[in-house]
Image: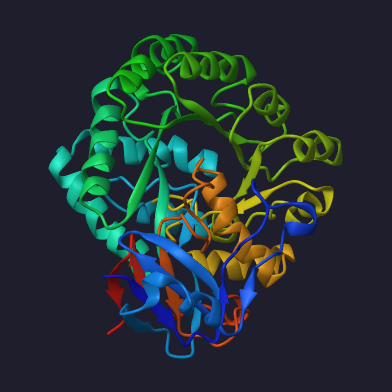
Length: 416
């Protein structure tokens, strides 16, 4: 039986041109004040003014789902997360707020490698159980699809364990997880001082295996001083392409290395972070198909300057927003908080932030044709928020606002 959603104060369809939204389309919400959405099975078959949708043949006899005078929109698409880990990094948090630097924390055994030790000491079933709990948290916050990175194993067996945990949780739903292999996240302790040997292992052993088992869609690396350089990016991109993996890059986060330009040359789907880009970087990014994926939650948590979202948008670049959810630098799964940070700290408009968190997030995962907007033929991933005006989603922060969430045409969460 079809489902007809009525009575929304606003329907944000995000309908617009094909491709990531930029330029004049960067804030196009496709807003309807007397709109309706019609769903048959797991797909949207009509979305538009209520009289038009009611005239659709499938609307006759459809089950009615009321939005109760609230905002209706696509589920958030969170295009950058690290959600599979064993434990929070509370010692790191306490040290950081006490004035210790990232490097000092790493030297005392914290940072990425502390999470690596936790993952290596965990069974796959335990990682699955932890990710399943976090998947519920994402859904309850209105997020219906995430990208998830490995990178806390740093050897073949443990990286595969992380990716298999993602597949296990995604296959059971309701959260949809798109996996990224981030083997080049840090050099493991057993290969300290042997970065080149580790990169060869990533490219010659790990990436081919990930491709063979179809455990990931993307490959990524942390291109940063003290971690991996432009030569490593070239090697990882080439190995990933050979294995059928598309490229994402942790780019220009802590310093400007030139990784954005290299990412564009390799046709990266996204360049992520971009805190340290300069004006010289912007024209090439705007002219490319690469999406700038900004993760301001980590800047908030670390007390660091924010990426230049306003300049990126005004240059014509396509911008996505994501949480960067991880145990060390952004323990936040709530995209609505990220939208609020984007508006208050990076001067994005509420409309630009919501476009970046939905349809542009979908394009950042290669899912723009099927996810991220309420248009006929697209997957019925929909969130209803306890707000009458879409601007409230950025305005009211720090409290849950999710009314209900639908994934593939089925309501999978209702607020109590």
